[in-house]
Image (cartoon, rainbow over all chains, first blue to last red; front, side, top):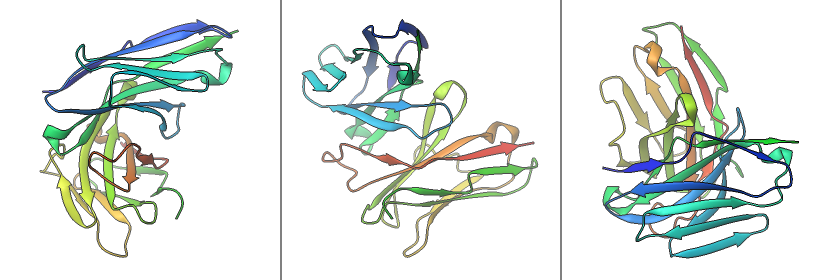
Length: 111
Length: 116
């Protein structure tokens, strides 16, 4: 089976830093994705990790530890427009490289 | 095209009616994925295609759901005899590879299906 767990909701203040965690269990790990989805819109790609470590892209960074089945998305200098859902997704080569999504974390950024 | 185009944007069907959704992948992309997004942002994988061939259909409820990707036509997802629980947003995504080199899938805007 494949389980992806992430918090349901988080709240943070404008200008602050927030870390969204994701844990997963998979039989054939082949990459982890983070997507951002604003309400009523399509998800947009944020990051991809397949090796352990930190990938940085502007205000967003994503970390992966394959041995722990753990990733996090780090958002710095939060802006109001960062209020959205953040979806952790894992690709499994044991399942035809299918990408399975977690339930998402709703982030609320307050002034 | 340069984006994944899904039609219609909204679809309302009475219980028991048929629903058909369309997806035109990005030109040059050979992989197409269908996802069903229900409450709380949970995505459920339905089916994927490599060109016109089914790549993975382990997520499809086979009794009422079917999908096709024919050459020179948009891909389609059809639901026969819709039920209330089929109400969801259906997303289509495409990518140029489906295997290890695939680092990004591009999503369409989705079709919101409401079954009443």
